[in-house]
Image (cartoon, rainbow, N blue to C red; front, side, top):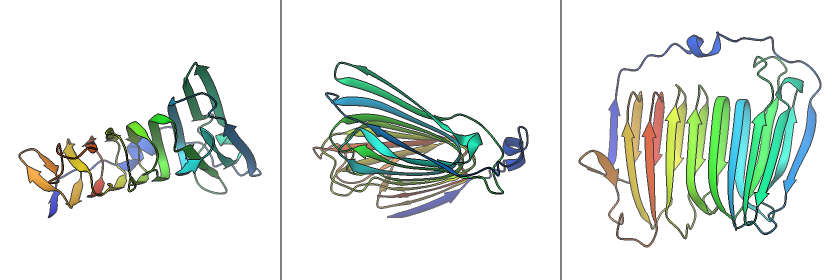
Length: 233
């Protein structure tokens, strides 16, 4: 089934971007690496806070999280890690908030463990996030968007239920949901346009025929002033 509907939603982008402008950083591009061993952790909270730039996020790591950062000086990432028994908390956040453009560069290229159960949170301001994490053992995924673009690919073979919550600004989001499991999607509140394929409207939400019958179910909630969202079930 294909569903498409529109709401009137006009939010001037300069209200968001113009209030705290700084000249673009034109300094040299630096490279840092991240490699956090999984150790004894069977559950982790991972928070990624990217103010402006590009994120490429995948599964398939033997570590809890690994990868590299390429950035000009205003965007140096800060990494904090805390382990308590079998639970690890990792926070990666952008240190500065310099203006975007010119020779500015802020690329995060990261891989996550497929073994530890993850609560994953992404705060994405301006820029683009490409996330192919369908085989990551998610328990909960939260994405807070700004004025950028999020491409979220959850196609894979999940073995447990999980929840996805997407909220925020005036950007665009495309979400590919996994096949062969139960799916439910709720979308509310000031969204510019929504395209939904592969799910059937049931009262105030969308779901497939397997929802609440399959061994694994994924629940998606979308809310807030997102300019355009496409959900592919």
